[in-house]
Length: 337
Image 1: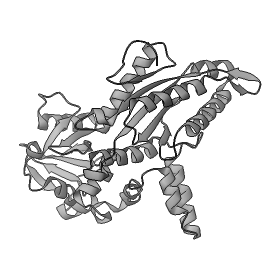
Image 2 (image 1 turned 60 degrees about the vertical axis):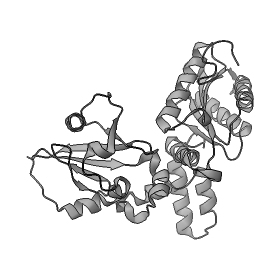
Image 3 (image 1 turned 120 degrees about the vertical axis):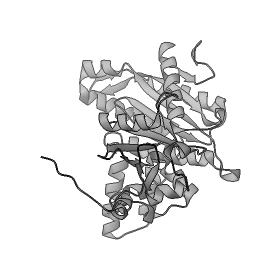
Image 4 (image 1 turned 45 degrees about the vertical axis):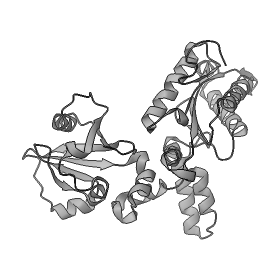
């Protein structure tokens, strides 16, 4: 049995400061205070938002209603903004309205800078997560918390490190990488001296499944830890390294603007990963395929485009015989590098 529930608009605004209440014709009937800071006086969703990850001809209200019916997320971009798309959950209301609860995701750092947001602009139950997004990387979090000696701060440090760290390799996990990546995109979108380009490597191990199949998952875990050591050794302290899948890694390289050192790093990583790894007397052999992209090749930049292009370059490396690096837009086919 289900029962209706009414709640004052003021309470909705407090609980969901990024909500939209949209009428059947697309009119904005209610808007959370944080979102209102970002969209100004816009009165209709079509005037300020555009659908992302949807066909160009898609109808706005039809897309919202379909997302509500199918229980899938909606992705809305703010027009004339460099922010990544806002992600939202949609609910249909009995009177034809739809309620959309939006989130900033990896764009939170840029949004804080662009719209002068503070902790008061976020719901109480998500404050800790949003504040953690302000840190550049897991290492930055640890460095900040190290200055505090109280036992409460030490306990908080351990919890935050665990939230951002891959437990097997001690590299960043996907959540930790998103923090570093969001900061890099914000720096790339800045003006003047604050602007900084970056490069992104997506590395996937070749023949890793054979190691698991022949020697077991414990041997596979040992190989992953050894690969993590290689990545740390070959990169700089300011680089962000993350394990984001079983044998998939992302490496963010702030300030990397030249192809030559990028290829040199890629070849060093490939050569190092091809060395046999001894695990309990077993010689485990893997290699690495690398896809790369550089932010200075883009006009308007978004996390989705950068990641998609690095993934495309990685598959070009796989198709070229593996054990090589491919730079998106430069050498997606041809001889290995």
